[in-house]
Each structure stands twice: as C-alpha cells, then as structure tokens.
Length: 283
Image 1 (cartoon, rainbow, N blue to C red):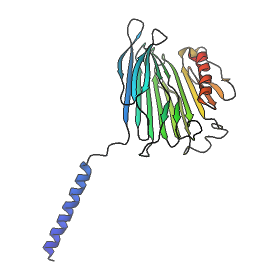
Image 2 (cartoon, helix red, strand yellow; image 1 turned 135 degrees about the vertical axis):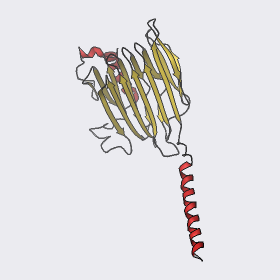
Image 3 (cartoon, rainbow, N blue to C red; image 1 turned 180 degrees about the horizontal axis):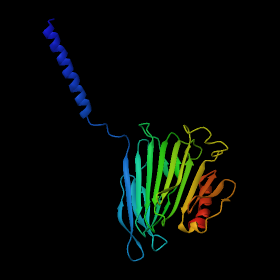
Image 4 (cartoon, rainbow, N blue to C red; image 1 turned 90 degrees about the horizontal axis):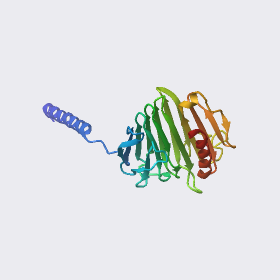
C-alpha cells in the first residue's frame, strides 16, 4: 500500500473517531429509572382569622385532599396514596410552606410501604417544610413500613422562623408481620432562625452499619418513632428530661424544642407512646 493511501486511511479513522465522540456527547441521557412525583402545598393567612390554601397540587401517587380541621384557624390536608409507591428507583417529594400567620395540619390516609423495584436502585422520599413568622405546621403522617428487599432513603428538611411552631411525628416499622425488614435510611434536619436545631440520622436493616439491632440500637424492637415539638413558649419554660416507660425518653433540645423517642414491639405501641407525648407537649 502506498504512503498516500495509508495516510488517507489514518485520516478516515480519525474522522470516524471524532464523529463517534460527537454522537456520544449529543446522545440523549437515559431516562431515570422509577417514578418522579412532587406534591406542593402553600398555606396563607386569609385575613379573617383562618388559613387558605392557594396552592394544593399533587402528582402520581401523591394525591392531596382538603380536610376539615378541629382548629378553626388551621387548614387541613390529607395525603392520599393513589398507587403503590415508593418502589425502588422512585423519587417522591412533599413540599409544604406555611406563610406568615398561617396554620397547617398535614396527615396521610394510610401507612406508606417501601417496596423493592426492578432497577435495584434505592427509592427516595423527601419532605421539605417551610414555616414563616408566626406560622404553625403539624406533620403527622401514618407509619412507614420497610418491606423485605426494599431500599428507602427518607430525608426531611425543616426551615422555620424563630416565632413558628412545629409538631412533627415520624414512625418506622421494620417489615410486615413475620417479615424481615428492608434497608431504611432516614435523616431529619431542622433549621430554626438560621441556626441548626436538630440533625439526626438513622439506618437499620440489611446493609446498615453494624449494631443497629443491638443493645445500643433498636434492641430487637420492630417499631420506632419520634415526636419533635418546636414551641417558642419553651424558651421561658423548657420541658424537663424524662423517661416514658422502659423504651421511651423525652430529650429537651438546645432551643425551644423537645424530642420524644420511642421503641416498641409494634406500631400500635409506638403510636400510643407518641400520642401521649403529643397531648403533653404538642397541645
């Protein structure tokens, strides 16, 4: 082969390589595995002593329904699961804002089951709560059940003004009856007036750091929960640390807040403990 022919072949190969690289750069990215859905809620004072809901928008499995609240100045919203979720690879988000002087009560209609998916990727469930001056939010969802084979990462972020009030409950159940749990990672972060009030993380189930089920962890219990109450009145009269039975404690935080943590053999007992704490501290 002549030198000229060899040079032509080399140039053609180089051109082909550049074309392949250009195609790789311009090819559309593969769509993310799983479902993406966001529920958005905005509560605003209506000027008549009540709270309006100018924004109430759900997607996919996150359906929203207005409910009648026992408190006349509070707007109620129920989160209703419209389909099975989250599965592995899903990413669900709840965003709620209570404007100045608004009062919002959020709940869910049923327990949330974290289920395994086909992709092998973890599912994600994010909750973002924003409370402005004089606002209050009660976030009291039903338990989250970590089903065998599932992998769920829950992240709850709260940003609140110093004059806002919050009652927040989280309950986790490790597996259905007679079932081993999946992997559950959960983190709760609360920012009060630009200052970090609480940053707490837990991991349990297969793949969690060792000791999660030992004496210093869950000690064999299948249900756990916590109740966080942020109340400006606690600045003048903070609750005292206390023990509520064998596996439940009250911990005052470095701020006008208290955290109640409970372990129990089942979800019913956890709810009984947290309901009693809510009557005492959540008012």
